[in-house]
Length: 437
Image (cartoon, rainbow, N blue to C red; front, side, top):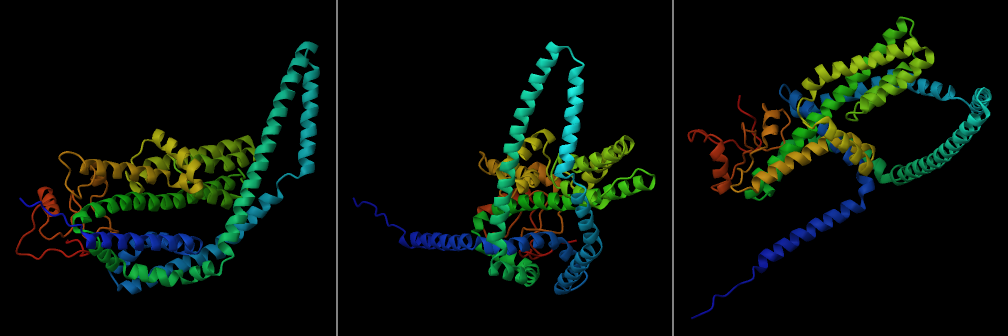
């Protein structure tokens, strides 16, 4: 009886080692040049945001003309911003800095507060006066020590961060060269977007294509819906805040720095849950500085804007792209802000939603029996129907499954279990073909 011989698949092992070595080399190279790649990261974000507009223009003109049209529109917007909005914004910031109390004024206010405090204590009985004085002095001493130490730490940390950022980013010739190349690089990325998707699709192992494009669809739908929606909401809220404050000023309720407060309201709108509150605080404080009536009017204005946003704008613009309860979102906000800083606070909602949906998809694929490959979670299937113009998957989504063209594999059989079989008389769609009307 002859024993079966076992042959080691040296060629397969060599191929995998070659792949891992190539990935390691590319990763090491990108990590070593990470400071110079910042412009291209900005370019990727711009491509992601501009792609829907380019695809929309592409329906009525050549794609190169659509990209150039978007470029011209962007140049017009940037020119208008620097011509009409930036100068008054800088002027209001300078006015706010000049109106900040000086050290002498702060000392004068502190002396007046101490005099009023001494006069108040003089009206109390001696025993109560001594106890109150001791308690207030101890609390003030501890509070001042805490503020002083925290302020020094914050200023030192902020200064170190700014210095390191400036030295590591701006003082590099490659960084400036990268920003110079971004418009040309972005043009080619937008021009060959579909070809790039088809190339990636061919590189993926055929048994993993449906799972890969399903995961990419989850990430794309959550981030695209949330980020573009937040940008629209920020613009709408900032415009509404500036217009409302301007109307209050026309009725005699003067609020200074209207443009600056409108920009603050629009930017803080990017932070989920607490962003509108943060944007309203400076305006309400400046309103109460003018008069109590102005402060109450400004507070009512921001509450009205928030209610209009939550009841009319958010359901129509952002919708259920995130679908996270506010209580859970607050915890995510604190955790992501602590770990990743301001960027983590802004992206806490989509990061949490992506993590939840990816976990649900992978859990379904690993179940017994497993869910069909490409079958998205129930919540996301409701969100993405009908499919948006921006598609990451090389083929349009069916009602339930991200389908890919797999020749005679079991993955195709799984997809056919939940999707109707196409007519054999008609040719099948190639990857990247447009969705039939």
